[in-house]
Amino acid sequence: MIYSKLLGTGSYLPEQIITNDDLAQRIETSDEWIRSRTGICQRHVRAAGQTTSDLALEASRRALEAAGLRPDQLDLIVVATTTPDMAFPSTACLLQAKLGANTGAPAFDVQAVCTGFLYALSVADQFIRSGSARQVLVVGAETFTHLLDWNDRNTCVLFGDGAGAVVLGASSTPGLLGTRLHADGRYAGLLSAPGSMSGGQVLGKPTVQMDGGAVFKFAVKVLDQVSREILTEHGLTPAAVDCFIPHQANIRIIEATAHKLGIPSERVVRTVSEHGNTSAASVPLALDHAWRTGQFKTGQLGLLVAVGGGFTWGAGLLQV
Image (cartoon, rainbow, N blue to C red):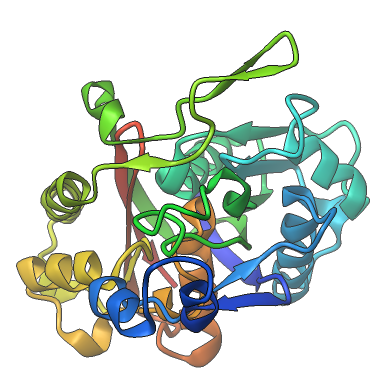
């Protein structure tokens, strides 16, 4: 039996930081208002000309270094992003070239917004389990701030840019125990960026639109459900989870979900205060933080969960 094993993690956040106080100079808000409702203190914003593949490159280099691998040893690259560099080629192909990775090996993007990294992780796991790949780079990367209306305080305070990456390798011992993925397009109107391009012109609203209250209720409900689904599938209960690594969207969603599952506070990874919601990058950013700080240790079981526009949601169980 072939399994996917975590070999290394990496992350990258752009140097430019916008604090809550900075936003208060531009829109009607305050540090207290943002912190109390979201738990966010600051967000990182890409530099002029900095692309999603640029962010992915830095996170990928760090993950490869941690794994002790060269780029030319990769059999596959999967990038989860909602904000590709261009319509095509894919961000994964652009990343492959920038890394100097194995030419000829497949590279492609996955789009499931904030759940994108879990979708990409699941795809990579299937390649490894089938024997089609042995060493795979999985990246969640976003330059999400260019989708924001900086005059809309209900959305612009929430999001930031960043990238996180992991390297998976084929192993005879279990690592990624499994994933559970879901989607329901009937809820598309709750969270979307409904603009499009036609004839060089933007049609509709290209910035994020969100029903915050409805998103909160939906997120807590489905994150609890999918967590219990995957734990039950593997004969486990929430008590078995050593490290809970949720999508970093909002501290209230994180804490409400952990409370419903009965996971103690000290087992919950929280990075949202430092970078806000980075969409597909948030789970790998949190995973890298937990691994490098020792919150997630060898021999422990991690539960990864995310929910995003679509609506999409999912969970993964990772033994390290």
